[in-house]
Each structure stands twice: as structure tokens, then as C-alpha cells.
Length: 307
Image (cartoon, rainbow, N blue to C red; front, side, top):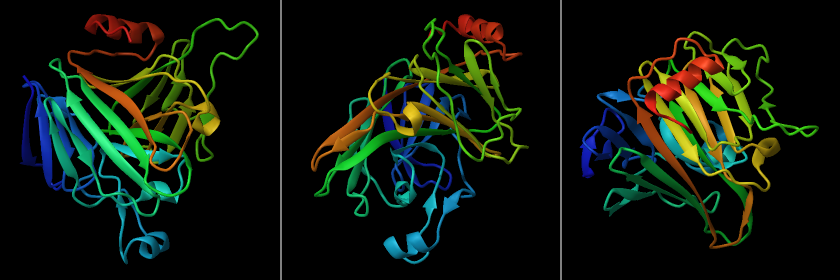
């Protein structure tokens, strides 16, 4: 049985708690929305920026919103539009409308006047604790809008991300793309590539940012933290994709690990909507001693995970 109730959570204000009794999710209502908590037994896999360390401000925000306005990361899972530019950073520091569902709710922030976009986040929990997050953007303006919907999960420090690679023998054709950003160190010791998996570790002692994009053929990625494994699943779609054909991107610095899913690029006519669905799962009793393909496969086998 799925229960829902409102509760105050740290300095994120009022949130809706959605739980099956073991797995719990919290979605912010006074700000955002963000899925600010997803976890079990007091372990939240999401990052919580309680100190508001990550924010943006300046002339763009003063001119287009109000003097002193800031965009805050907050942490957790959010909706953005891609490709990234300053219009991605519309502040969402205000209350969200909530429409209850049987096993969750629909969270609707105020429309974005500057971008002429309306975000909607639908969050529902299955009996097994799987959280389905459906992200939508609607063009509420008068002109066509080319964009990709971008779902970003900002995760806590100290984990190891596992990204499956394409292992199909493509003969003389390319097998797997990888895209890097200009601030990357290509020899970054947090990043490694095996035959089956790419691995990225979050290290709170390394400040330099690292970002990777690729086409994820498998429709899932995972983040191992202590004895827990967070898995994010999504539908693999073709067509034109952002950033040299990336449907998946990841970013890390000293504070966070981000796992990001991008939809195909779409031109939205006035009144049209684009949506994307992601499914979150969490497993307990995980052990990962080394990040070789063999050890990763063993970890998956031990918990009955097969992608």
C-alpha cells in the first residue's frame, strides 16, 4: 500500500512524502519541484544542498526576474530544457501546485514567462518501491520552440557510477560515442572505461568538474553507494539528440554526481507538449570491491539485477 502525506523536511519546506513503508520519496512543494529524497532506512541517495552552495545570480537574473534573484541547485531530481544556456536556469524558488493521484501526485510549478514553457512532474510509486517520474514541458508561447527535455538526478557524494556500453559487434561501423566538455581532464582518475562499462567515481577531494555524454543503448545507469545501488531506467529513442547524439550525460565535481537523461530534440508548436519517463529503483545488500567488468557483473548477479 502506498501512503502519501505532507511533512516539513530540513530547510526545503513542505514536501509530499510517498512511501510503500520501506522505500520513501519526498517531493518539494514550497520550491521546485525536486524529488529531494529517494531512499531506504534513512539513506537518501539524492544530494541535499542544505547550505545552498550551488547557485547562480547576477545581471541576467536581476534584469529578467527581480533584483537579487538566484537560481539554486537544491539537489534531488529536476526537469530542465536542453541544450543548456542561461534560459535553463529559470529560478524555481516558489510554491508548486499539487494534484494527488492514487499512488503519487502531479507537481506543477508556475509557468515560465521568460521561456514560455510550462513544466509538469508526475511522480508515482509502485508497490515494490519503484518510482516513476514523468517529466513534461509544454510550449505556452506563440512561437515554435526547439528543445529536448532533460531529467537530472543530483546524487550524494561518495558513490560509483556504472554506465553500460554498447558491446554489439558493429564490424566496420562505429560502436559507441563519447562526448567530453572543455573543462575535462581526459586523464581524470575518477573516470575509467572497461569493455562493458564506463565507470565514474564521485570524490569530494577533487574539485575539478568532469562531464561525459554518450548514447546509452541499454536504457539504464546505476550508482553504487556503500551497500546500496540506485538504478535509473529510461526508454532508448532515436532521432536527433543534443550534444553530438547524447541521450545520457553525467557530471561530477567535489559536491555531487549527476545522472542525466535527454529526449530527442523536438520542435514544439504552441500548445504542444513533450514528455519523458524515468524509473528509479534502489537495491540493498550491495558489495563492489573493484570496478572491473567481472566484479560489476557479480554485484548485479548477487542482487538479481539484469538491466
